[in-house]
Length: 301
Image 1 (spheres, rainbow, N blue to C red):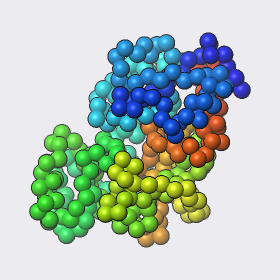
Image 2: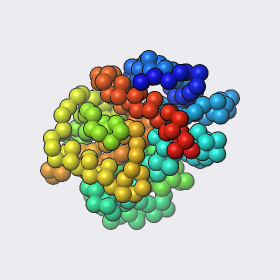
Image 3: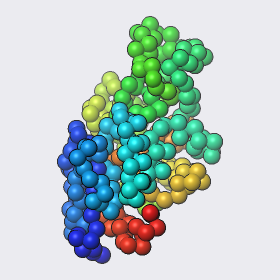
Image 4: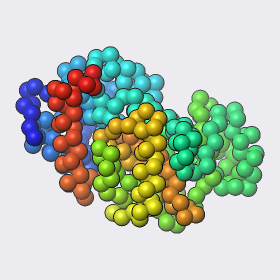
């Protein structure tokens, strides 16, 4: 499959902190170029970018969007007004940008870590009902463990840290799941609705955060049938909520008590672990090219 680069232009959205194509996306970018669609790297909130010059925007390393959430939503509104589709779709990006979607998934029968949503003002009452428990608190709009706390309710140091949380956020309050440390956190990668590959992530010694910037590591792994079925059910629930189609998604979760519990669905800017899976990068590239066919663009607009 090939399209003439003069007829279709694809923006690859990055962030000011990560403005270039990252190593994990290198084969994806090269595959797009081989297919006749070389991606043009653009920082998502750079005011100098003329988004109207593009036929679509592939979202990749916009890893600071949650720090500028209102601007992010405004950007999606501008792209919609210009008739420039995003990959994934802008409605799906908006929905996925606030982690309260987990409560919607739970209402559709998806097993998640038990989660309560609380304003900063309501946090003391929510925590008072969890006295003595180890908990995790994170903003509902966040990423990379930003403003995330783990501690024991009733501990003075933890209470002091809670007091320092930003006041203008809503927070998810969850019991800490020790299997994240002892067994690891799963990430299952899907492209065009089909499972591709998986990794299991482990935090550094003495930590609970699995992100690489906090010392976490990831290794290839094969999920068992029950874990894969649970991830499939989560994606079916997303479809039932009106978001049936996506180019990519990463399903993050942990096995606890014999069940796979969804921690997050990453549909905006997930690290896709493509470097070790070039065939997956090529498959995603072909799908992106297909989405820029005249018929597909007409449907998207």
